[in-house]
Picture 1 (tube, rainbow, N blue to C red):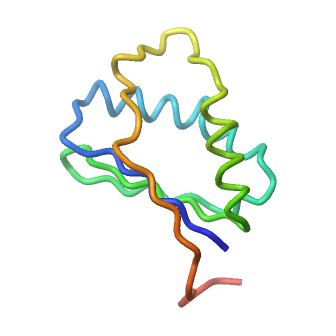
Picture 2: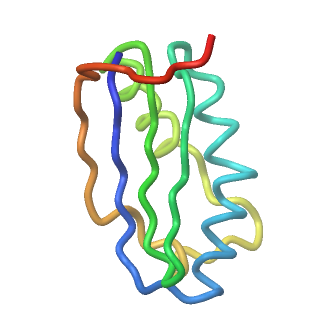
Length: 103
């Protein structure tokens, strides 16, 4: 198992957050769901809009394939690229241990 941490540094404006939420719901999540090997994703957000997206996948290749699928999506009508500057950094780690996993 592998985890990818994708960081979006704050502060981010309400317009940037709305644009990010729309992109995640309408474009990014469907693209990621279509890639075999993805397990789950958690989105962690602070009050200032800073965000860490934690993605868990079966293999490191599944994470790479997901990145490629997401980057291959075109912006949807009405999406403003100025409001979607992209991640500040991305880190990938092998999962060392899992505690409290649910069946």
